[in-house]
Image (tube, helix red, strand yellow):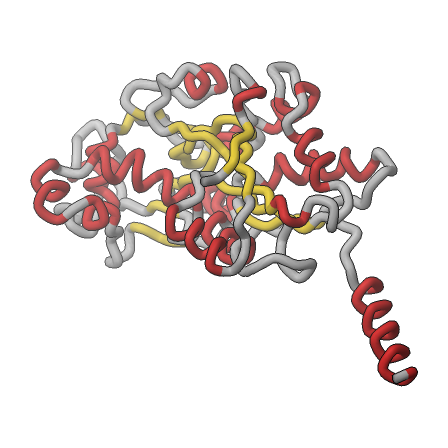
Length: 314
């Protein structure tokens, strides 16, 4: 009996020693720069350890987040689109039954190229035609419209697991898709991308896209406003349906490719992992995400009302 008790105590002590004292966050590469700055400031307060953040992409982050509860799973997941019904179902299946959704701000998706080239004006229909597997598969931009560049189409796009890709699908590929295809084959058919060369998938690394655009002046790239806003010396954003991407055009809704940004909190880890509630409070504070908050310097477009940013996932 004594041996059993001693063994139990040793196992308990081992479990406690391996419990985390740092918040673990995964998810969107778009939200990553904002959460990193918040985490650094949070850690410098001295009350809690600096959270560990991994850029896995929205889809990859949700898989990890919904894998279960316990210190071997993430406490939060950043997302550049809303959690999907199938992800909520996966979470519930694995015991993650209490989740908070936090809208951290707004973002626009920039369609960019090297700062050295000419600026163009694209419609969603033109972008769909250039990228779609069910389109006419033009070789040059000028094959779509004479006003567009007279060189080969080459577009760097995030992978299918990216929330930015999801948003691009719903805001560009669906909207630019011919009505006949949408009605007869559905939106998923509109999302199918060309596999004959012009559309080039890259990993969950927007910096990689920017560096590629600098080296390849005829390439175009897709990524969030914050990365563009901090790289204006290297890349330029093209007009979408006569509208320039900016803080103002995203906030007032006039920029056609804009979206909210999120992170999701595993409430069952509150009280288990130190600082979860306090981190959420810091991220959603006026000093961080408000109209004059420090995240504006990184390109976050603030919400008009921060109080309405937090809700429970049902």
